[in-house]
Amino acid sequence: MKTTHAIERRRFLQLSSAAVALAGFAPALLAADAKPARTVKLRKAIMWGTVGVKGDTLEKMRQVKAAGFEGVEPNGGMNNDEVVKGMQETGLVAASVCCHTHWAKPLSDPNPAVRETGLEGLKLSLRDAKRYGAGSVLLVPGVVNKQVSYEDCWARSITEIRKVIPLAEELGVVIAIENVWNDFITKEDEALRYLEEINSPWVKWHFDIGNIIWYGEPIAWIKKLGKKHISRLHIKEYSRDLAMKNGDKWKGFNAKFLEGANNWPGLMKALDEVGYEGTWGIAEQGGGGSPEGLQDLATRMDKMFAS
Figure 1: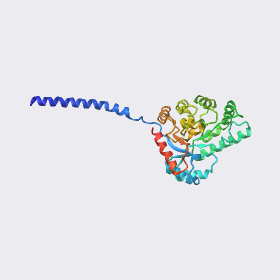
Figure 2 (figure 1 turned 90 degrees about the vertical axis):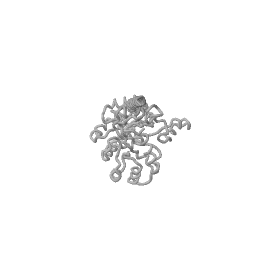
Figure 3 (figure 1 turned 135 degrees about the vertical axis):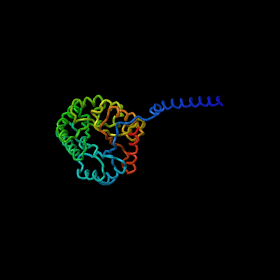
């Protein structure tokens, strides 16, 4: 009997020691498998120009809200009262305002009268943003073409932007430069140099994730511009495969969220690492022409932001 009890006691002690050892490893094993905690919490908004559902401003906002969005990005020059009423009744927030004149009346145009019209459009957009409670206005700074060289676009746009910085400061609204397919500023180093030459806390960047994929890597842009310079994010997908398959780079934008080239886990990690504080991720993506389409966009954005 004594022998049996001794064996059982030794076995109990061995099992207990093993359990203690495993318990010590458990936190490390769980930590290895766990997804890193996100410090950046993006809020979902949608660019007004991509809301294709039928109805007036209020009805469109109701459908945007029902789909799960928290904010909208109105265009400059919209009916202020209608926009404010829509936000008040739905609880949506103005995440940003998109300047409505920057393509037709660019600040880089050779004609001073055209630049002046564009500048007035920017001023109106800034005042609209103040009325809506938005802290940022999206601006395409200029367009390079046969009439406008890269150097002229750079110099003219900076000259015009500087004229409106005092108004931006007075209103408390940032002018946020967007990277678009305008043959101007396609590299992150150039983007940083542009902002540093303007040298104002009231001029930052509205980073469009999808627009840059044809030219480079979005993560590199996030790391280069960082917390200091990124004001807002445009959330857009792009597929190099679709572009190459169709022989048309514009076809790359036909990809749905999560079906393109964007490395969303890597992008979210990069935003965490730089400490992005803009909070808003604004969808500029096809598919918002129906309630179901809006819902699909919102659902996919949730998955992207949680990756």
